[in-house]
Image 1 (cartoon, protein in one colour):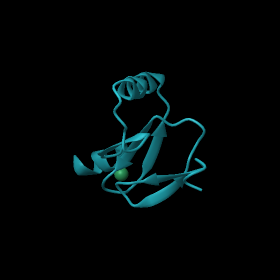
Image 2: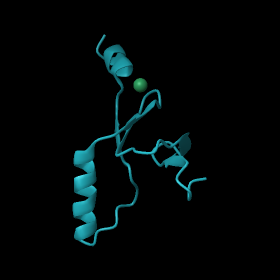
Image 3: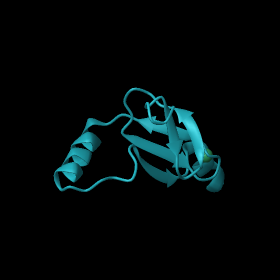
Image 4: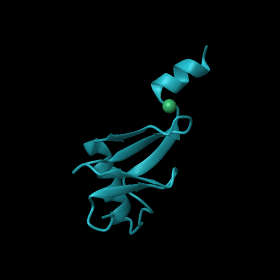
Length: 77
Ligand SMILES: [Zn+2]
């Protein structure tokens, strides 16, 4: 359930993945749609700072779109 934190909706893909207990950044490959969930305490500091500024993030973990290593290698051939 999304509301209970077990499933994470990937907004860029309109898809769902199982949410690990801690995930601070979501890397989304825009080519093959592979998703990597990254744990990084430094990002939690940024999220806490945003909350302190009374800014409500649209989604956490924040999503970053790009190319995974496999797709980046294929694109550079
Ligand atoms: Zn890829």
